[in-house]
Amino acid sequence: MILEIRNLSKSYGDKKALENINCSLSEGIYGLLGPNGAGKSTLINILVNNLVQNTGEVLFDGKDIRSLGVDYRSLLGFMPQQQSLFDSFTARKFLGYMGTLKGMEKKKLNERIEEVLSMVNLSEASDKRLGSFSGGMKQRILIAQAILNDPKILILDEPTAGLDPKERIRIRNMISEISFSKLVLIATHVVTDIEFISNEIMILKQGELIVKSQPAKMLDTIIDKVYELSVREEELPQVSSNWRICSMLKDSGSVIVRILSDEKPKGYDCRPVKPVLEDLYLYLFDDRIQPSPEVMYKLREALGRGCLV
Ligand code: ADP
Image (cartoon, rainbow, N blue to C red; front, top):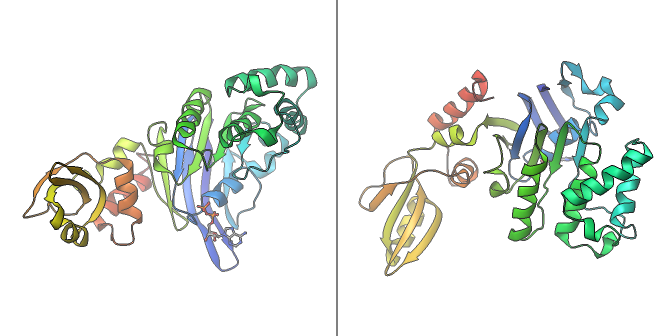
């Protein structure tokens, strides 16, 4: 199974939302990251055939998804961003309705509804109305409708939006469990949602795909740019005016500050530390940082060569 995105561009009037996206996806979990407005929803809506691109194509096993029609729909599960649920429906009735829309045969559908309710841990709430569901339960029932037809391609747009940390972790673990032998694409602007469950991470910046790589390889590009400094509290303003601070921790009299810096900071008690995805995200998107040409070159080279794709 291979989904190929070729020379894909999309504009809304004068506004370019996606610019010449090229990449291939197969089985595995892909995290699609980028700040608001980066083009994630536009890309997803093209991939699920809800939106037509201006140029380029998307091929599933070599065939244009737009020409595959119903055949493509039957391979696809989609969880949209907005929680527009039918509040008066029970969970079971909602899944029955969605399965019917997907063209599933009644007996098979009824069996599958019980299966997916159990997979998303909502069996006990199956006869409750959706209007009474918590945010996390609503997200889970939306995932349940997306996997009803056991899709080969599962696309989730901001699956943890509006959830508390406990529910986020629960949804994240559930996605890992249900994704076996599927192509799963998760769009989010929350780094921790995808950092540890994605085989590959794709980052969109102003409509451009600037990297697509395994998380560890991606982090190698800033391996010498994250430091921890131990400073006195009164030195903090100086540190924050010199560098972008990722995090800080007060520690009996001193403060441990995690910073991003292209050079090893001079004049401070400091040590290099292993980057995490949040560091890279900040490095790429913080207004105060001009990413070094060397890092951008490494990211683009990896993307262009295809070795990380
Ligand atoms: P994301 O999902 O990453 O937040 P979007 O794909 O929603 O990004 O948006 C990408 C860009 O396209 C943004 O600048 C957004 O304002 C613009 N955009 C999205 N949808 C429309 C639309 N229907 N009409 C005009 N501009 C749009």
